[in-house]
Length: 195
Ligand code: SF4
Image 1: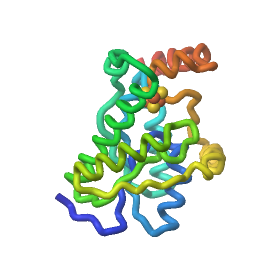
Image 2: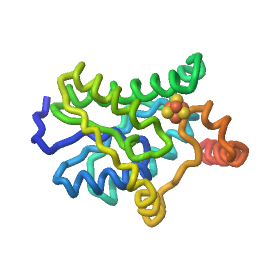
Image 3: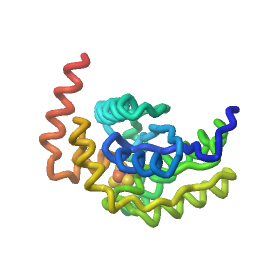
Image 4: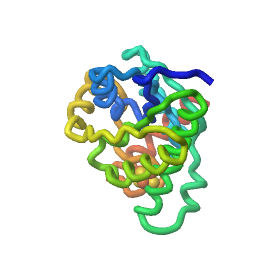
């Protein structure tokens, strides 16, 4: 197990654009972030790959290490019954628990998530889950509120020419997206181009 310095932080990262502002703020506060991409909620796999590639680009631009695990898990999300709050709770917990496990086994003392930049996510629920997991795994969870920098982060992503998605991630959120037909055509084109 590597023992990290106090200022090393594992940054669970949902995508490149959402990482822009938190990375800027963490670096300004003298943290050394490692980007950690574990997002089985990003569906289908072609979309998981697309967001991963955008994060790879940010990793190259920023010079920060990037760790990726897993892939897309559509079936698991389709099995989840109940309200959006239960589905999203499951989603946040699944992703953050994996990040906490990685942090614990690789010597990070503190972790957080780029989900805390988005005004479209359930901020208080993410913080609640982050604190629960921190307690469970003997870590610290950085409960930042980066939402005021969301637009700035999106602008930075535009300047870096990063792909900016138009739905949250899971197949259910895709089916609810105003842009779903256009996105499905993009997915088909991307799938054909890799075959
Ligand atoms: S809407 Fe977003 S946060 Fe909720 S389950 Fe789907 S991907 Fe996860």
